[in-house]
Image (cartoon, rainbow, N blue to C red; front, side, top):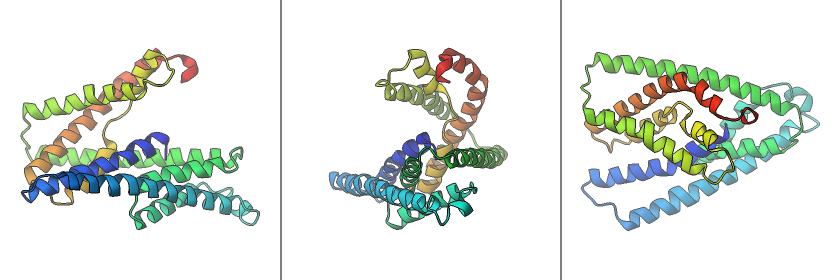
Length: 257
């Protein structure tokens, strides 16, 4: 997993659980109390993040020890699919101990990379991971297109509020949040703008939204509105990214590409 995917998507999960807990409380006609907030913070933030980091370190170091050992070096060192094994083992162990699999996979990859860090095998793993990511991304986008087609056939009525919320997230909240997050780095202002604006938005949201809506704490109308907002953001960002990526990259110094 890339740093962006591991940290961004992994650290987003506590807030997904927070939204679910708030929806659960209101669906039962109760207020979201400070006790519920403390329970969320201790379990979903402290425990799950801490355990995910620990699992990632242990799995990453253990896998590195196996792969780079003298007994298995010749048989496994030429195989790129070790990256899939590392991902599945770290994610599975993390979920077993009720922590965040995304964070565990990221930390495991980092710990694995730090072992024998000068070895040429890491480049093979990186290339294989990039190919797998591109293949899976294409599959997700195809499924997303099928979903949009079904939504259009269903004749879903879109109000102006849906568009306002969607474009607010896409054009204001995400870029401003990204720029603020980069404020501590010594980068040219134009490069910060480019990094904040680039990228297809909301692919991870498909996973989080599916997970949250399967809890049945959201009304059917609310769930449909959330899917529509998510779809508009992703579809619009695909077009904007395709049209503006080259121009935004030209804004940044060539040595930082």
